Length: 209
Ligand code: CO
Image 1 (cartoon, rainbow, N blue to C red):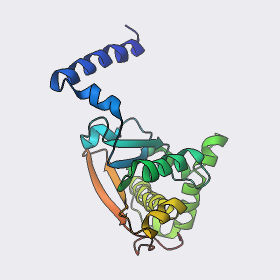
Image 2 (image 1 turned 90 degrees about the vertical axis):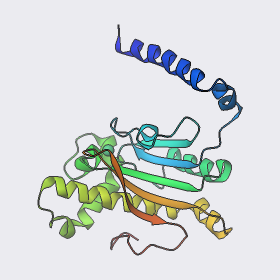
Image 3 (image 1 turned 45 degrees about the horizontal axis):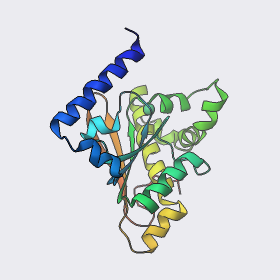
């Protein structure tokens, strides 16, 4: 059997299991979505948003890209965030990075693929701007993980600066942006930072405003 055929077969098994658990599942699902969360994560295959949070289909709107970036001129991420807050009305945006992130590692050294280099330029800038802090790391792994955390804070900060996110807060509505990191060694998520209003949080490192 070809690798792709396994997926089609597994899909049949999954749909049958869902129906067995809840005969109404697809009838309800087809009516529309009302997810509680927007997840912005890394494309890394080891960090599947729904699986690591035990969330069922319909509970989470998901956007993933290399290094969980929120780039201010990227129409893809901006449209996902706008739709989430203005149409779906999600109250929680989760920016989830992970230790050992290949994108973050790449941003620390020369990148010979121009498109990826451009995509990761904000992480490279973060690396350069925080060099003295990162030089305190005792190992390359620790340095990467520190930059992973800095990048999560930076991307949370970027979400908080988007005009339609600020509009939600100005209307007095609730919207929390959470910065989480996933630990591949333990399978556990850890909170790095949180923003629940338009105020610049104290925990954003220097030089990142
Ligand atoms: Co990654």
